[in-house]
Image 1 (cartoon, rainbow, N blue to C red):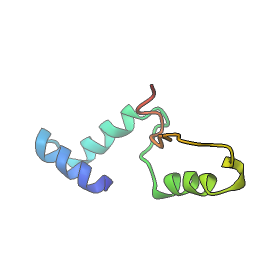
Image 2: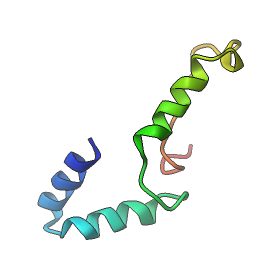
Image 3: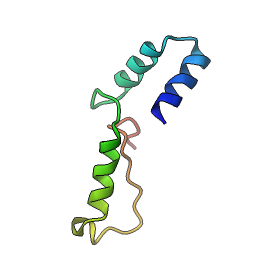
Image 4: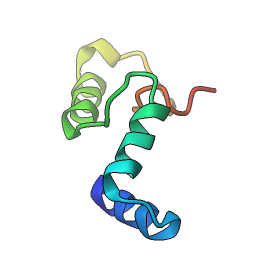
Length: 68
């Protein structure tokens, strides 16, 4: 999905893909792009007993981009 987003942004803004990625990284407080493992780790946590008392939560896995 991320490569499609980079391509779409590149086409809209007429920027090279490297610049689009650099802009995304600059906007991310953790300073890197998200990896599939970042999401998978959250899913493993939610499926574990460690999350047994959680209900009805929205969990953002964004590296801090959308902090509200």
